Amino acid sequence: MNIPREPKYAWGQRVTAAIPLTNDGSYPDSEPDALLVNQGEPGEVVQVGLQVELNLPVYLVEFSGNRVVGCVEEEIVPA
Image 1 (cartoon, helix red, strand yellow):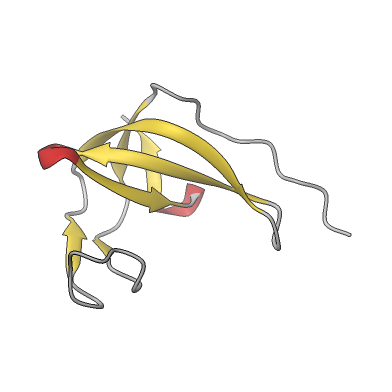
Image 2 (cartoon, rainbow, N blue to C red; image 1 turned 30 degrees about the vertical axis):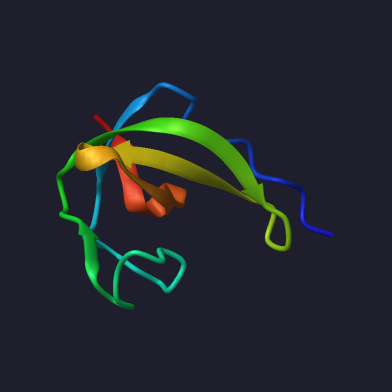
C-alpha cells in the first residue's frame, strides 16, 4: 500500500509551468496533445486533490485566460 505523498503546494499559491503542458485527452476543448500552457507561464493553485491509485497530489492550476489545468508536482514550480 502506498502512503499518500503530502502536497508540496497549497491552494492560492502562485506557481509557474515547469514544462510545456499538453492535453493528455482530459481537456475536452482541445485536441489531444495540443499545447495548453507554455513553459514559464504563471498560474495559481485553485484546488489540491489526490490521484487515488498512485497516492499522488494533483493540482488544479488556473493559468491566463481562465484555463484550469490538472498538474502533478513535476509539472509546476513555485513562482
